[in-house]
Amino acid sequence: MKNSIMFTSILQSILTPEEVQTVAEDTGYEDKARKFTVTRLLQYWCVSALEQWDSYRSGVDFAASSGLPVVHYSRFSTKAAEVPFAIFKELFHRVIHKCSRETRRKLTFPKELLLIDSTTMTVGKTRLPWAPYHGERAGIKLHVALRAESAQPLQVIQTLGSRHDGPVSEALAQPDYIVVMDRAYGKLERLDDFKTHGQSFVIRLRDNVHLEKPHALRRLQKPDSSVIRDITCQLGTPQCRSRQRHRVVMFRDFEGREIRVVTDLMQVTAEHIAQMYKARWQIEVFFRWIKQHLNIPTLFGTTENAVYGQLFCALIVYVLLKWLFDAAQTPWPKHAVLSFARFSRLFLLQNLPVEWLIQIQRVLLQSTSGFIN
Image (tube, helix red, strand yellow):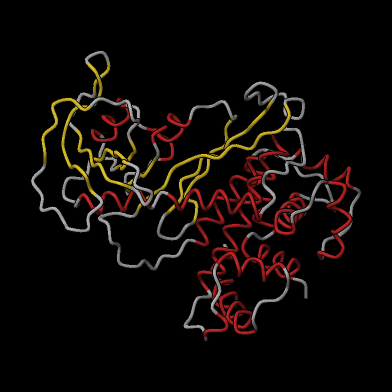
């Protein structure tokens, strides 16, 4: 059995046709098709991400070998442009909810880290005239809140490429997490608001932010510590200054560069603050992985529905693959130990070790009943 066929079976066990239809109806979309339904479009989009199809036309050539009913590529294209992408966004967040693991490891930090950043996909401006970006390019963004503990998205927001990251981060922030963000998000007013409303944060400061009235925090310097300085201060100049005092930790990264981060956490060591910010690299790895393995830079369509529908279905594939990988973990013999990248590759090539195939079947048998609403 091909893994693409296996994948569509897994997808259908988690998102049944009845549930997909319900979501479509709740969105206000009336699916009049008898054969190429929203469920079928979902399957086409997911398999296109998994197998990295090049286009609508080339994709339908592989449909039969992937276990999908063959349709003319124009039907695929028309349906993709017609179905509201809000359906696939809702299905994506439902998959996140269903596949989230309730068991938690003991956390090193007081709360789980939530890594927030965005990635941009660009094409020529004539492809997406509704999404102007820079010069002759058009672009769209995915703003992602990624759980550091599980490397699974918690929430995703789509915008035009020209939309600034900062305001969107406020919608992605969650008080139950410590948000970790890069310097594009470090607006002084936002830092004050986060602190006022109890949103814990670790955010890199821009290099030109002035530190006003610094006060050193008493601490024992560890001999091998990368921390340079640990202070509280106000941020900015008299013309634009934070209302509150904030803690600023300065440390050197693995390349020796000085990094300054601001945080509201006062009962955590400076070394732990530095570790929290370094964990932000996981979201960069996530963006690189989905672009390399899920065909995200290759946008098939030119309408909002087609573009965002394709992207959210690709994210569904990531969530399911990561869930399968994590849920199937067990004390493997040395020859069967796999990284997530290797697991995904062997899954696509139909060449997983037999131990993994057996374990995945066990996971699916135990979990399927819990996925049915």
